[in-house]
Length: 199
Image (cartoon, rainbow, N blue to C red; front, side):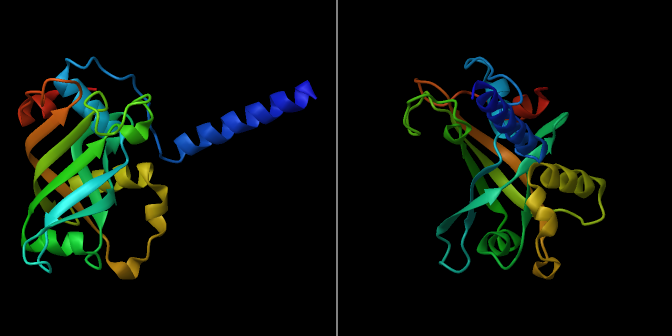
């Protein structure tokens, strides 16, 4: 009986590792010190796989429109800090961005499971909002090839999404960063400091 339980345990571990290999590479690196604003921000973005992408709605008279989207900021050994998205104009987010680039991406630490018993709104459970311009990438650029690899590595299902839906790759050109990861208000962090940090 004990040996059966042991093999069941090993099988569950294998399934968990297989999940990671298929792209949901969460918690691949340790959480940085809270006082290391750039490191914490880059860690949170690199470990996350989805967030709320907000755009200016053309169909709702300029109201903000938030949408759950998947993203990736790079491959395992090359995190860039720049969020890339695989979007279709059948969805309002892409349509909005093509008319008004102003956008923001909000990510919470809560889905990573590293907040303990803290509520998602509690300051000890980090959250970050990257604000800037959501732009369509040139389909033939090197950056697009890198972004596609990054997206398909983290989200393998995307490879099979219908070609007829005309998915395109977008990126968020970051202009401002708002992050809270402890009490005392948002951490001072410039875009240059954020992008320069190496994981």
